[in-house]
Length: 308
Ligand code: AMP
Image 1 (cartoon, rainbow, N blue to C red):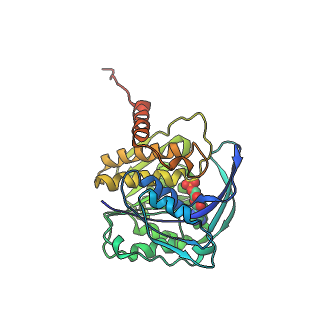
Image 2: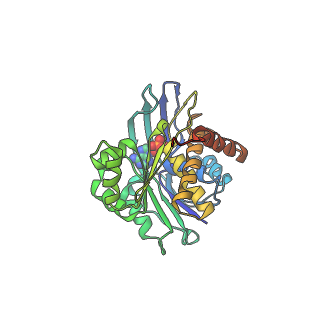
Image 3: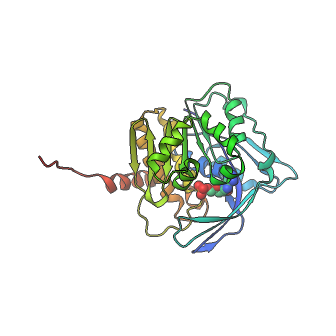
């Protein structure tokens, strides 16, 4: 089944304790699309860049089965730019710059060929644009998932609440869940957030895994313990891309299949952090992905005996 992705396609400048990059290709939709492309092709992309965005990088997306008909290139304008610096724990970071540029006036156009997509991933972007995309779909997709971040909670809280009320699933990290709900306990936060609209909620906890909530059910997936984390940028988006890509491939949105999708998403995220930017997501082999998924299964599989 087909997947439509929206989100930022960007230049990022990243500083970690291991080094720093100049402007490299990044953005939520870039990570989501690359990750999803290992499961479901084509990945239909709706996004915007400026004239400064390198043609080679658009070609790179295409070579991964990403359809770029919905990617607007705005002549005479600059691409979205984000700069971040990670703390020594590699889990927390400071945003040093957010230059919206083309994103500030983005009017998403959904090509006819993308209408009818069954899975929609509303990646991190202005919540008003996320709403517009959903409103411009002729038919509501089978599953609409959405990501957001603290920036939009602070800049446009009411549009964000409206967007959250429209989607089936929210995928956010623990810090964002706490900020959005005003609750420290993630179980309480999950209840409050699901009362805002989404039936499904995923809370990502970085190196501590991810939680899926639906009805009375909770599922937890660990993150793979890695010796070296080089750059966590985009790990959350890569997780979302693997998760939605797997659901789109299988077409099954049962809770049990979502558990499998979470493991695929977590496996993809574990690759992302091994190198700077999108580097590790380029040219992965299916065998590498299967091996990673096996590592995840081994990590928490137990043969339990009950005491009678
Ligand atoms: P993550 O590490 O998963 O939170 O994703 C990082 C990506 O989000 C980077 O590649 C940034 O370009 C992108 N990003 C950062 N801030 C924003 C924002 N306000 N809106 C959209 N995308 C953003």
